[in-house]
Image (tube, rainbow, N blue to C red):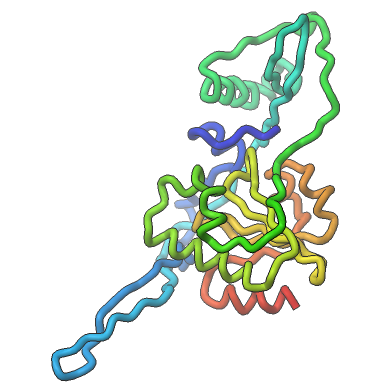
Length: 255
């Protein structure tokens, strides 16, 4: 299983990190969408209140994505004890950074880490069975019903940003998905909407800086992959950035 994000190391493990390329010229980049309110003079001392979604863009240095290590942990038992173990690692100079990352990941998650030699008793490692998603029971799911499932991802999100997130989720739900999945583990900030008639599954994050990803009906196979494999492995049918016109691009895809 891919560990849930709980700090800087596990976030890098799941999502990677961005390297700022200050050696390259700046470029105009979409930053986020905000809910904008203002009052407009309507005459005779009256004002009308308006609200709309606006894209924020600015000149920035280009960013280069450092791919996430996507280290997954396995639950194993030996001698009546239960362990969480990392993949086997070879001790050589080329693997030093990776070994440091795994150790730091354990320290961040559990506050302790034990290294074992390769001559220790073998673990009876079970076959990999990931549970990155859980299917919600059939029914209608307005935002008020879905929100409790996303509490962990939304806990530090401002009210203004939650309006943007709600608008995005409402837009996708308007197409009446057949099933809705809630992400777990490394996918904890995603909702997955399955559309049988379109032959697609649409992943939408509750974090404002993530794009929409759409996949085909090989969803059961795709859902067994790690987040890094899904997002960065070119398995998706489409990637839609939440810049101006994203709703039209989604509508064009879901037709």
